[in-house]
Amino acid sequence: MSLDSLTEEEVKYLSTNPYIQYVSTGSVRFTPEFREFFYQEKQKGRSSREILREKGINPNILGDRRIRNLAYLVKKEHERESFSQEDIPSSKEPLETSLEEKIKILEHRLAYAEQEVEFLKKLRMADLEAQKEWESKHRQK
Image (cartoon, rainbow, N blue to C red; front, side, top):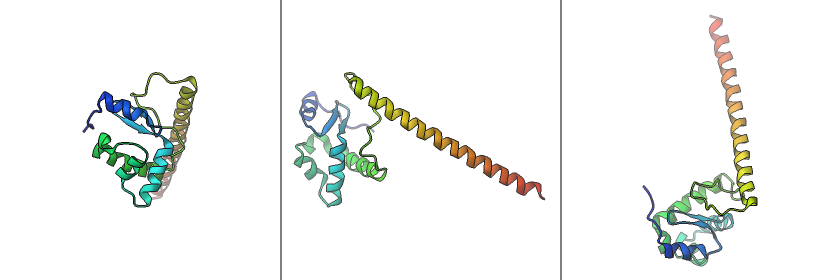
């Protein structure tokens, strides 16, 4: 279920907008500031298309599916309170990234991996405790 590809002209048009972080024929990534603004305006009851037009983005180029996906992802992102975090880059990340950007990306990935390890440790400890409790109940009989 892929989205319609953008033409090269549409990519060029969208890449000039300061609220678009990355654009290719297959994807569009908005800046964290825009996503926060978008969420706040949606909470006020404004339509997605109206918000995009206000920031100089032609909603007809994006299409209905991308706009729906944007609204859904921004809502989910807000629930996780992650507007200030950098996105984990996809395989479509542009090759021309500065050393500072690469460091930011790697630091983000490291922090994410550390959180994952801590979660797995807690999960394992809870599993061991549950196993001990189960064994103690079944030995008494």
